Length: 153
Image 1 (cartoon, helix red, strand yellow):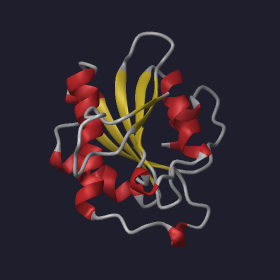
Image 2 (cartoon, rainbow, N blue to C red):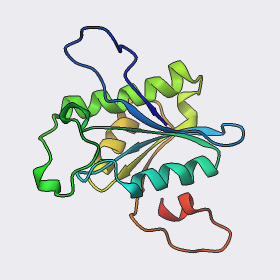
Image 3 (cartoon, one colour):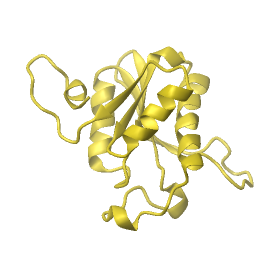
Image 4 (cartoon, rainbow, N blue to C red):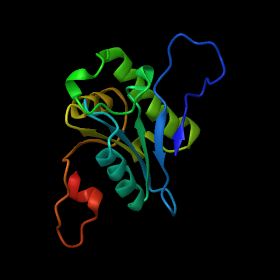
């Protein structure tokens, strides 16, 4: 499921990125902001969001490339230059969605970064009172008793 910016149908100059949202099937045990790398919101990032939802987390991932009309770039070198400010706004807006619109406590939320997204996850944890910043590996391992999301974190 995808949610657009809250200010849809209004004339605006800037807005935070729309969100890819994955709801858990049962009760929400926490939230996760998933921040992609230069490749964009790929199938791997979506799969990780679904894994988090299986663990009871409401997972949201900003579409950082929304202004260029895309969600991923097959050639990361062709990606538009994103400003540090716009990336910070995207992460902050995702947190605001989880806290302000979904009612989670900031201490129930973690920021998960893929590749270059790790830096943004650390920035989010340093500037907001969230539970943790997590570095995500592209491929899960298989340890008995651990969920797919735990294997990649």
